[in-house]
Image (tube, rainbow, N blue to C red; front, side, top):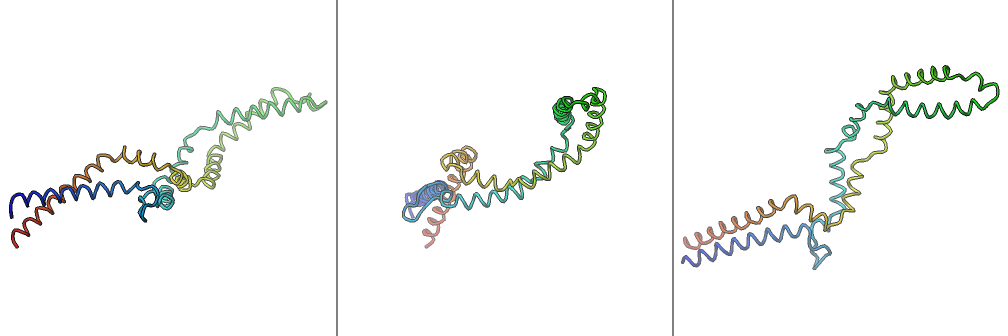
Length: 195
């Protein structure tokens, strides 16, 4: 076997390996619409992939308990104080307009009532937070949110995002295809020489 034959087999193997991997990467996103029965992986399976990825995100990556855990560190006192003051002010103003009753509602009585209620609310913060977490957890479906977002994600935008994240890896896959193709070409040349 001549050197030219070895170079042709090695070069054609490298070209075929590189081209095969390049086409495989392109077929992740293209063709968008079926052409002769062929369609890119993501355009064809976007809904199913969105469902699977949403389920994985909701069960494995972002758990509701982990998402709600920061609520335990929130001090609700400022919010409770503001809400209580607002509610008491509105109610006291209405009660003071009532003849006879309004005369018995002193600022001292209102202050004692407010401070007593506020103390109870502040002491009940763990129960309030637990109730909030339970209510939110009952309504929050992280997997469904992720699925909906992924299913509606524009494929052009998704392709750009994936290329930004994995462009080096895609080039490496193409070059490894060329290297493996070249090795296979050399092996073919060696086998042909032995025969």
